[in-house]
Image (cartoon, rainbow, N blue to C red):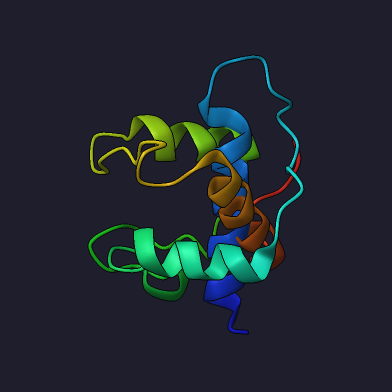
Length: 109
């Protein structure tokens, strides 16, 4: 597995934990990094191919808290459209964050 793919999985896991704003833990949620790699490729890979810069910035040279990743995914940002639960389930988001954690892009804070 490439470093970029692992980073993406980690970032996805972080997003799942932080997005809901329902008092969830800010730690890295349990998830399946392999499944998260597929979700990352499907939902994030166009703008962050293998976690690297393209339309979006590189994710592989930074570390994110799971809560921040979850928030960015669910709420979007100035440059990124949100990915709602209808498009990416909470379980799939946990997997995505686990993948990003495996890449080293997501870490507990």
